[in-house]
Length: 376
Image 1: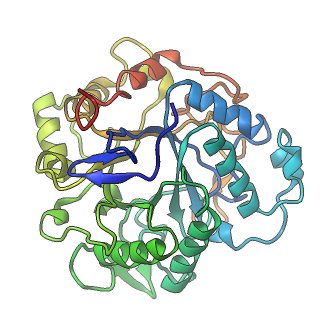
Image 2: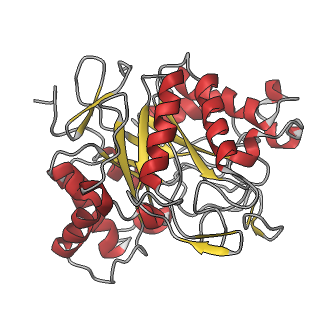
């Protein structure tokens, strides 16, 4: 069923144009933030067929990472990366990105662009110099301008309904100085301030957009929201975002109660106190292991239980069964080669079918909203 846009927020919920709860339940499709600047898989599958496959599983949104570097490339993408999308021959990376956005929204999927990196490459680490919205190669003005361009390019497409402003805020070295991210600090690295300024600028272009604000320390810490919530000129448009993986400070054998307490104190309180919606924009694990009985250990059991108990919006990392080429940002050191297996991916290596139906079934069990307007 098509989602009635525009989306807004009502207390802790995202709601559609009729005021009915929308629970974002999606997948990440990455590659455009990597070395070649194009989403992975376009050499294997027609983009419209991939969009249809995603929608057929019941997902309603796709988080779609890009890099600032990608937005500035003017040389056409090599045809070898577009073999099953030959109509895109001669297109720049940004034109390929736009075409994929259209293919996704043509299937009724919400698309959420995300500035994953400033440079191209593989995210993330504390020493990749990409933890803030600026570094020695990319000033704040270019970050802002790139977002304004993305908003303009898709302003006429109502299913490009949200913008995820900056992936996994973290430490970075800029100008030889180690800088840490802040929240409400009024310092040069204040993410609450940049979410406010960029959000207001994007709303001048498209006032319907949701503005997604990731927490500090790899999107694991939203504790600053309680004292410094992000407030835009346009009301009811802020969604907060966390990421979570098994290595995000979760001890082996962590009890469900301890996990719930950890997640709620880090950001889940935003839901329970009715401050706003919360979206887990990334979580995932090795799909083959999760498919086995008891696979994934206590973390996988705990996060499923938490997402269900608190009716949280979410987005799996990733749909990709294979990587694009990705280097350490700002270097020539290649971490992943084009076509290398992505163990967290849901699809077969030819990108044409689901490889791990057991994992997809577990995700499908968390898609329908249990609470909120219009769910009774």
